[in-house]
Amino acid sequence: MRYIILVVSLFILASATSAAAQDVLWLKPGAKVRLTVPTLGLNERGGWVQELNGDTLVAHVGVMHEGRLRLEMLHVPMSSITKLDVVTGRKGHWLEGAGIGFLIGAAIGLASGDDPSNQWFAYSAGEKALAGGLGFGLIGAGVGALIKSDKWSEVPLDRIRPRLVAQQDGVGLGVSLRF
Image (cartoon, rainbow, N blue to C red):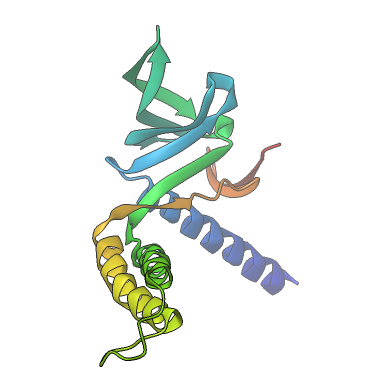
């Protein structure tokens, strides 16, 4: 029985250490974040992490003040954050560009109509639509690949989070429960 308790305790501690390490890794200084903190009136407001100090996130966040957007340093308790997104990279939009290009090329091909049948190169409107769609689709894919935007990932804000707790006679296991 002691062996089972020891194994379960080690598993919980390992997962807590892993989760804490992921939070620290994602929320390193300079990381671009979006915060939702209802108590401060922030709804997916963008900013940058200054530091993660215990259970408090210190961030530079854009805040509306007298009709102007100002950058302010906020000390936000992690328990008051309902949603936290962090930029994990950049992504291109080649697929959207290819789709838009294909539609434009196909529309131009269809609008040009059928060629007279007595010409050397006589194409139907459907053939022109396919050729135009493929050609403009390739161009659109190239343009879309050049257009980059942030790739956002949500930081898991666990409802139940096991933690190591320092005590006078050693280290204990604590659990925080958020509602």
